[in-house]
Image (cartoon, rainbow over all chains, first blue to last red):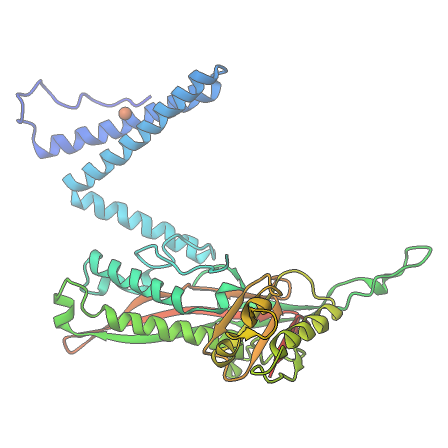
Length: 119
Length: 273
Ligand SMILES: [Fe+2]
């Protein structure tokens, strides 16, 4: 369970949160979504009832979409953070490359590749 | 892939997207070898060589005790072949870079076509400088004399003969036929007395496909059993576009790939020439 401070010191009037507070709020929201995925996944796996299993798994996947939305929003609000995230991606690719494991951008930034032309 | 230096180019994502799409499409239209060879990889741009094994002949034993190890199939010869870097550079003027509407993509397309053709050259003829054998050049491929494909059933007879030779040598599975462009033309005639085009009769014999290529010279064809234990194509870095840098105000790019064909069983190949 995340143990995070209250996102805002007081109930602020609409539109009065600073950009910094907003960014921090989005970070807290991401944590909340990850926690939700964690729980729904455990519950879906544990559920014996097939309907419950399917519904919980579906909600879990919706939460994953929310993580994607929030990260994109975070990168928009904080371009510096976006750069750090990109650096992290590059570092992992370099590790993979040094291990001789092909990464999915081997074909270039477009991800387009010729590959096999055999039917 | 930092070595592609794409971030260094003054292109927008949309311009890169146009180049990538055009390059890949042209390569797909041009390549012939990849339409019948099994692709291995991409094994990564940093891979410089791969092994190429020749197995000992298969002489199955039949005796009482089952203790004859002469019949064991094993790697008789392992050599390492280098992946050839195939590339073609193109130049985009600063005016074209500033023009978002796709000017300059034509040069990328030409480069892609050049690389694709060169890949087929290597597939068919190998690359002597790098000790790479191709379909036509590998030692031990069967060489048969080709008939006059203008006449009668010569094409069908040649292909049947080649199949006989290869099956006699132990080949099985899917077989493909690649013919030179002139022979492709000669196959398009009605076979007297059958009402069937010669190309359709020949095609019915090759379950792995019938292809024509401008890269194998004139009056030549090759029949091969395409199972990857006979032959495959290893790709290190698949065809892509890198940024080389700027010269004056223009920008230089490179379409490139690393690739090597592995002819493992030349006796599964019959060249008609
Ligand atoms: Fe959510």
